[in-house]
Length: 302
Image 1 (spheres, one colour):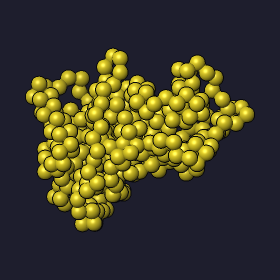
Image 2 (cartoon, one colour):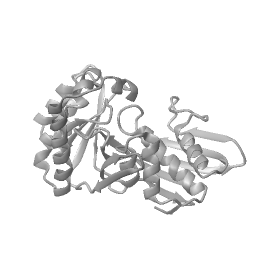
Image 3 (cartoon, one colour):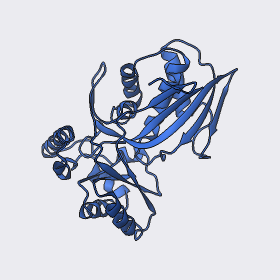
């Protein structure tokens, strides 16, 4: 039996559109084993929106891996325990890709390195800001080129906490992408470049006082705000409650705030969110600095 535990991720962090992401202490767990033939998928949380046939993203990723190594896909049973909400901007698709690669790697006894899986995952997703931190943990900054993906991993300080504000409505990545402009001004490009650099170096040096400015963005958040009711008001409230920085998670609609005073922030934010039309839940998480883990027959392998 193979067990894979994959963390949620927050991508596009502030100015880091399609490039900066971070793993969070929220997880999907997948069990896999060979069977005589065919495919059997069990969704333990009963989420009817998850495919239980060949369209399941974990299984599609397994097929992609086997095709790459020129082997036939064996009969497989998958058991999914999903805690990462779907289509909320917390990397649920990336978690499936990472789980599928790890399962196929172990089941085929290919033993590709994590570095090789990181490259493969980035190619599948098309950008590195979700799959890379899901595999490696921490905060990662990645850049794609024609041949591969270059990245740096930063260990996130344990003193930082992240208020993850998840609404009761979804937002598809496709719709969120359609809201973006085809071109941006030089002024906005410079704005984001400076803040992306400031965000990365601030996390490396532990200078959290920079985060209010370092998480600002002009490439995607302003254009997606109209798709997320009360987004700007919620982020402003978060700042007034002491958040060091705030940003849209992935394509949304989940919002994140970087905080230190967990109890006070959560109490005030929950009280405010209860006044809004949609229902929001607030989860207090930290960064996962280790990334996905794999057990084979109950023995932790990596």
